[in-house]
Length: 137
Image (cartoon, rainbow, N blue to C red; front, side):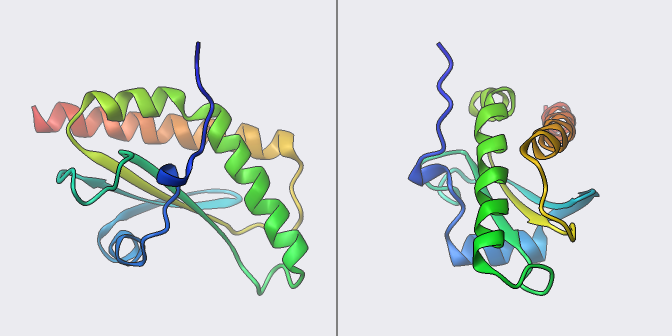
């Protein structure tokens, strides 16, 4: 049975790791998200989980904290439900993956739209992970 969890150790909270992700990591855009990702070869760099995710929403676009929190909650839920393939791919290797999603849209999204976009984001990250695995072997 598949477990759809997003526990404490799967959330990207380390300030050092987030700064490293933004400075050394790579990125791509898939409207309405900007995705930053960083593959870590050292297992100690990523804590207990090898796949970590963080979410951010601009105060400039959404003044009310209620709206920002809703977008983050919906994004995390879509990630939680669809990350299993990427998680299995990362667990097989000896490296970790840190991902940070920034919502850049200007309107509150529906869950169906977020879920659809998250599927595309995870598909692209899985392809990138496969390329990195092939390049490292």
